[in-house]
Length: 177
Image 1 (cartoon, rainbow, N blue to C red):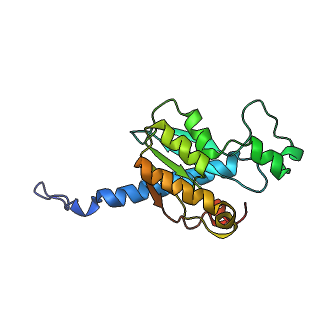
Image 2 (cartoon, helix red, strand yellow):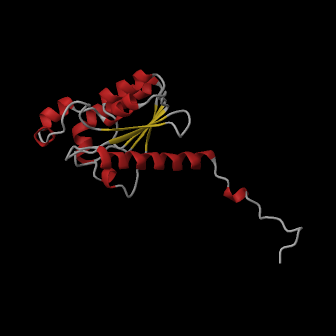
């Protein structure tokens, strides 16, 4: 029986520290970037996704690696690595182009390359990038570019947070690029 003087238990234990909330938010947006890659990227060998978040977490722009609008996603193009590498928009750039707001944090399923880092720095509004640590074949192929990208971020005052995302198909396959 509940009496009028009964009180609810204290809810202090339900409060989370800002650091815990940020880590949860980071994991959610990285998972969203991974879903974007799986759903939208048509490249048969490399699926990359990105999520650009504005000042408020409900401001979101999506990006994935793929051909720009107007170029057909033909199998012979997508299976020709040389042609594809020259014509593909990277996920980070795609997210920036899709945004109609000033993004502050960019989440990507791969460590940004040097060209994407320059684009990110050029926005003047993105202050933080969250991505997985490069590994496997991806690290071997893109290592120099990702090191140069990290140097650009450092000099431009952009925080680069590398964090794993367990249980993700695309992120787990980082060596398959």
